[in-house]
Image (cartoon, one colour):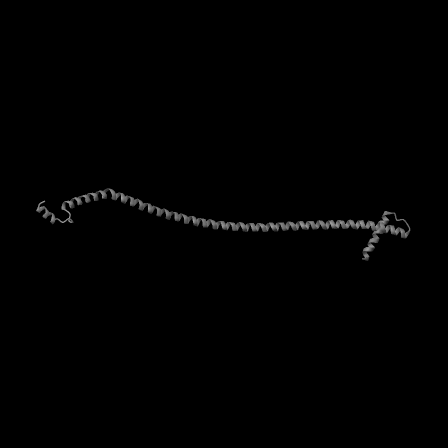
Length: 176
């Protein structure tokens, strides 16, 4: 090595790059920048726009779903209120019908009781009349027999017996 080269090398600072390296580095950086800007950046922007659109669409869908859910809730509440009103109306109608049925059954039962009472009174009256007739006949027969023993004559005439018995019973009723 010559002294000149050693002296020239001693004056070159290793930390300062050569101008040729700077120019090659600048050209390479510019070419890389242009390629990235032309090819890669549009793809990133496209992906970013798609993602932004998807997020925005999701938010809009969520808001629309929330509005639909709110409308469904309002409709459900209205239907529930209407159903409760109908149920109350049905209960009231059933209560009124029940009261009407009870009143009708009471009226029928009262009519039946009146009919049974009237039939019982008629039956009792018929039995009373029958008992009175039977009693008159027995009392008449006994009175005729007693009268014939007292008088000493036979009172076989039916018409005479009836008159005597009737007179005897009339006297008994007057004496009460």
